[in-house]
Image (cartoon, rainbow, N blue to C red):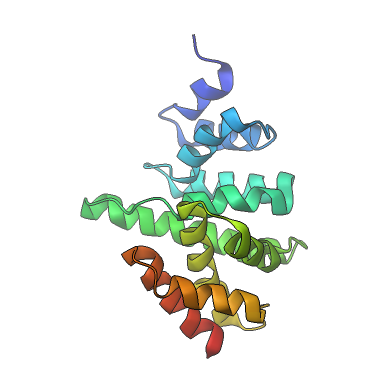
Length: 174
């Protein structure tokens, strides 16, 4: 038997899934991470993605950012329609990150910290994608150490990491 939040998160109703997102964001236990990631990458509604990202940043603030980076870093689907929705979801997460800065969430510092200290591929992919997005608005805290890490990742054998690192490097140095 499924618990009520899991049942809501699997509902056909996007409003129910968004409600589940706001409820699961309150639970910082690692067993809730799979549900958080599923709701961040909701295949049926970008509104659910926005609700999950917003709830993480609103309730957990900077400590919710690693989960959002993991959501951003998930593999891109092969199917074109799914890929379009995936791109919309990525944009929604990135826009939510940017708007949470207005609420005092130190997104940029948290992203750089992940870049420097994480060895999780999805977190690194998400961090590089976020840097590429956020650095275009200027005033990105790219310390020499962070720039050096991006340069190292720009030569990484993983094509996705390498490409995103090169894009982030361009954004940081423009």
